[in-house]
Image (cartoon, rainbow, N blue to C red; front, side):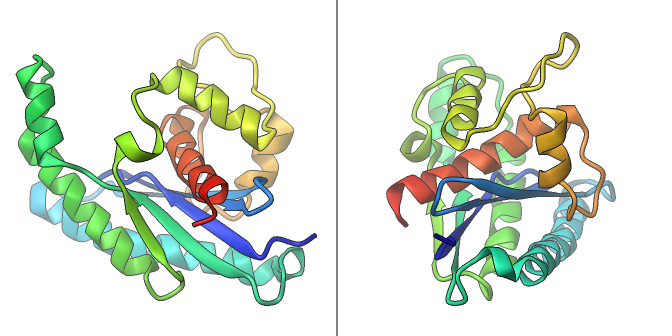
Amino acid sequence: MKPKKLYVGIDPDLRKLSAAIVGDDKKPYAVFLRRNKEGKDDQAVANAAYMACRLVEDVIAYILSQAELFDPQCKVVTVVESQSMLHTKHMRGKGRKINYEDVRKLSQVTGCLMGAFSNMSQPLHLVQPIQWKGTVPKDIAHKRYYLSLGIRVEQHNTISNIYPAQEIVEDLIQFSEAKINPGDFADINDSLGLGLYGAKKGL
């Protein structure tokens, strides 16, 4: 059966704008990255808006060029992680050094990504971290995503995060405009997790 829904998972970041496509068959199809290297503070956010539009172009190019893989009536659902100032305040109260300005800028980038993907998505979902991944530590959560998605892990000693085995990486990254390095999967894995969350929930 060809997928009837594609879930685009997006874990917002100011400097690394990533997206991952997971089908309703819970298979990973592609990952994408656009690097936002320009500017500081508000200028960096403004440039992220431009990069968000380029990212959505990459995703559209992939879907159109690989149309034979999907149901002709296939729908695209975008799942984006949200942020919370109240949660940030709570974490700061526990001694975590989280900068409010960083969270503000990240929230702005989230809005940029939501706007960029709104024309191709039906519908969009904005979900809090506690809603989609709970309090599971990142290294454990990423391994669970890979297990659910059938992604074999590359064995390594120097990279702290897990990343897919080479033959899987080559399939996943071929439509990414920016070169994706193993360390980039520290962010991309959460985008895969968000896509998987959408598929499991049938959003």
